[in-house]
Length: 361
Image (cartoon, rainbow, N blue to C red; front, side, top):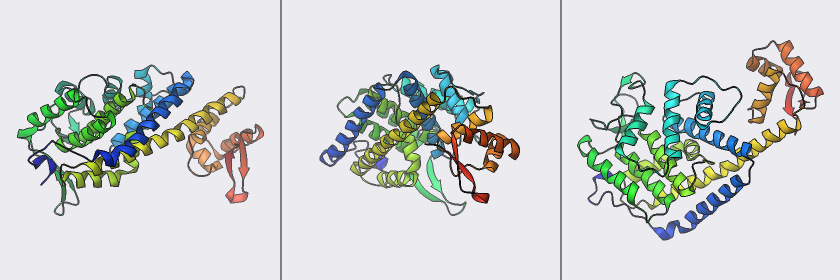
């Protein structure tokens, strides 16, 4: 039996004593991050928000095997938040739709979660009325059964089966009433419970995972009491994807005691907050670099590569890589690099075939 088939569903319960220490650590870390952000200058705070939201949108989709163009997502978010960025590009409708859903969840975090609002989110996710090659029901509860299945045809493994379509109206009414009216729970615990509850109902033909994480972000924004996001739960879930599906399956096939799920959620959230320090360090480094070199002249190719290096370029930078990335000849690439070496921006490492270049610290 799945938890939604148990007699007392959805009366979930947990061991509060088991969670107290961990919840306290998460809440302390939340406060610390908000304090750090309030001390940042406007431009750094804006860049942190933009980077976090871009990460949140792309990774939430990636968990479901949907890969969005990072620059399109960044441009779409910047446009909707009124942030000026260099190199903004045209965005496709399906990218704008995902961004619109996520921003509505976060920026309108105090607004009730209604059936209409959820339907609007779903419509934004699937503007063409299709999921891949398949036509799906959009902006309305599913009409048929819903199973989470893996494996090749004929060897499928059923991981989970959601409530039947006939029960969905009652299930969703109960869920939204609880979410909009329950005031006695710690908001972080409420975010964890809402995540489990909604993904268990699986009310739509597709997009349930992304909508679940939008609801989670909405409730975490309530916990932070700010529409500004400085950490990405979705990015951390993507890193811990196997454990995420494992704990979900185990919980949905278990009892109504969800202590283990709440423990996992709090651990994941804490790790997500850890990543904020990495993002902040990178943004500070970038800002400092351009400040120090504000009077240095760079061509377009050099600016492109320097941006990549400041974003944590993977591997060693070589003439061949420069040429491939910038679509310039190797002679031009070498001249660009040698110019940056003379300007004390890059330093050469190795010799012969092992020659590569790194940013001077």
